[in-house]
Image (cartoon, rainbow, N blue to C red; front, side):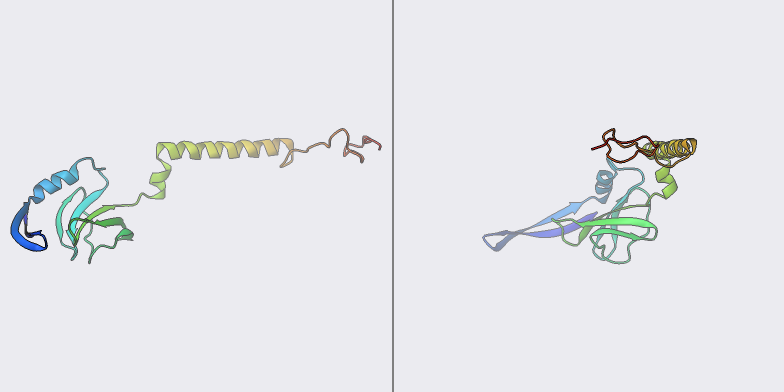
Length: 155
């Protein structure tokens, strides 16, 4: 449980105090919903103390999290300060995929296979014709002699 007392001000004067209690277990359940299994989420305080988390465990950040994407301990972190609660951060962390893991995903594997097939077909076409690029004959109204020895058009 996290408890806090907040003042209620009316016309600039404090009129009452409200005590708020937040169940960290309920907060953890909210974090667990609709979350990718490879992503870890944690609510933490500015000093680096974790309040609650969901997902795989990741190494704790040594100090207040920096906003943006940070890579450390072979993990990628991103943090965002909760606007309504200064000093509270929501941190998402995940291990970056390796090059091999990216290559074996279905879409990337299909594109990679297609690229290799096209490269092989281009190589076979160049080897089969004996030259690396097709020869383009000049147009019929070419003024000079043609490469095959036939005369060109005379002006």
